[in-house]
Length: 390
Image 1 (cartoon, rainbow, N blue to C red):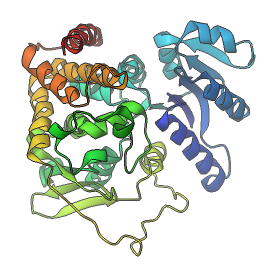
Image 2 (cartoon, helix red, strand yellow; image 1 turned 90 degrees about the vertical axis):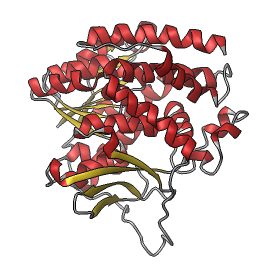
Image 3 (cartoon, one colour; image 1 turned 90 degrees about the horizontal axis):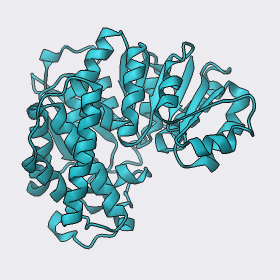
Image 4 (cartoon, rainbow, N blue to C red; image 1 turned 180 degrees about the horizontal axis):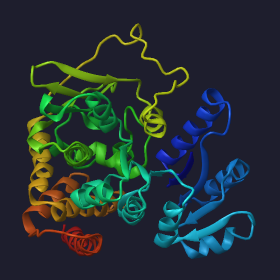
């Protein structure tokens, strides 16, 4: 298998490299999975370390974000072909020799290469939420037309994917997404006005990138996961619920029409969903990752509070309006999180901005990637104006 990792220096990218190395060493006893291409944004120092390590293991193609970075490092590694920008990302995923693409990019940078990979009929392992959330049915139509495949890397959606295996849609009554509750589980959102970026980034269970960590703190990540689940599993939003499960051992559950429930359990480690997507339809052993019930004293479940429940309804309403509304929420959240991390708005303003985005905009049907990109630009400007007025 030849693999391309988009966002190799990010959380998902680094975990994917670890999984590949462990599989090749401990399971396959050979270089069965070859990482032939990687991409990175601004972390050039780590990228160079990855190039040095992977260059003798099959790496041949590298894409960077900026032309200036490409010029700086391409002379150092003569055996590597370097590219940059969106065109470079699309080239990587289009390589004839590539079987699978891991998209660990952040934000809308993941849109174009995902669509290109779909057009080329690739197997796409998707951690880039914005792509499926904002493009939804458009992307799925292209995947179906070109016989591509889309696998979720999210722990919650990977869990649903597993639990659904062997079951028909009509057997399913509802999907239940679990949430750790983030760093502010027992606090009312209205009391978090003076929360600092450091506090919001301090997730109790996961060490993740800044964007997803803030989304977890606001619970926007659960709203986006509801939209993802609608598209991934062709499920109505009113059939998807969220429950607080602080231990993060059960990643999602499915309730069947007869009232029985199936859940997927594993220790909180992103290697599990990454490896499952990489090796699907097989299931390979992960070293020392079994759930030890002797060490788990209890598994707890709590209803999300009414304030957060009302907030999540915003995301469910976006599904009814279609891709443009989902795109608007993605764009608004991305800009609001950046503004918070830069100290320009308060933590509580993030939810406020997402609410206003749904209230102040009109949404029409989107039919293409080009229209989606135009909508993203429009909502980006709209959100910036909103931020400046706060």
